[in-house]
Length: 108
Image: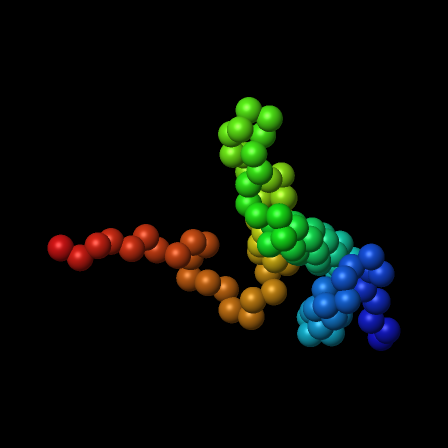
């Protein structure tokens, strides 16, 4: 069976990751769409991260007040979207015992 090729608009490292996932797992067409959405979210987050590394996290508005750059929200939202798409794909080999890790309690 011929494996699908990664979308060309993805960055080269992300295309390689996309292809590795497709080679390792049996994915239905809807899974490929989720995988592509995850890859796009990763690339978008990386774009924002690069801008933030160059420009910093904040800027000063016209009133002299520090404000978060829009890329802060783009990076955050992209990370969340990436994590959600991976969760939806359920690529982990073993199911976790719980959907969330248990809450840790301090000793004492």
